Every structure is written in structure tokens, then in C-alpha cells.
Length: 119
Image (cartoon, rainbow, N blue to C red; front, top):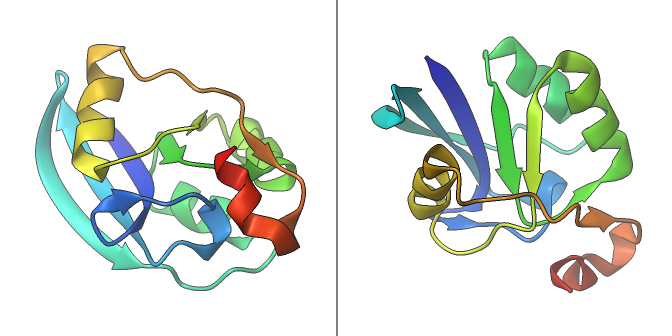
């Protein structure tokens, strides 16, 4: 089983990981989604969200953009980071399962200018 979290604004992939509204959590078996749940973002504090998702058993995180600090923690935990995603959260998850969603390495450096994370 692979558990994939998508940083989202409702059903859409968010541009900026830490400020997402919710995480859509997809449980998958043999590249098929078997369970979907949405959990609200418990709050953005440095280092908190990667540990929170790790504790939930997440194996993959998908987002539009993400800060380097969060990426480092996910990498330390062995969680695969996919950034540069956009559009529908479920479609992004299905693309990942098919192997067609690749990380662009879109790292946010300017947290106060979060609109730039999409560029």
C-alpha cells in the first residue's frame, strides 16, 4: 500500500504546500486508489507538516511548490516529494501512479511572495 498526500485547496493541487487548505490523502494498492480522505491543514509551523504527514504513514507528497526546509525533512523521512504539480488532486495522484507525473523541483524561496511559487 502506498499512501499519497496531495497539498490541496479543496480538490485542486495548491501552489504552496504550507498554506494549503487541506490534504487529500489517497491510499493506493497496485496503482489503484482504494481510499480517499481529506484532512484540514493543521497549521503551518516550520518542520511540523512533514512530521505530521510522516506520522500518518504518508509515502509520497504532491504539491505545486514547497520550501526547501520541508523538502529536506521529507527526504530524511524517506518520503518522495513531487513538486510542480497542478490541477485536480485525484488526477495528479493517478498521473503519479501511472508514472507520468514527475517532480519539477519547484522550490519556493520567497515565502512572503507565495504567488511566485507557480512560476
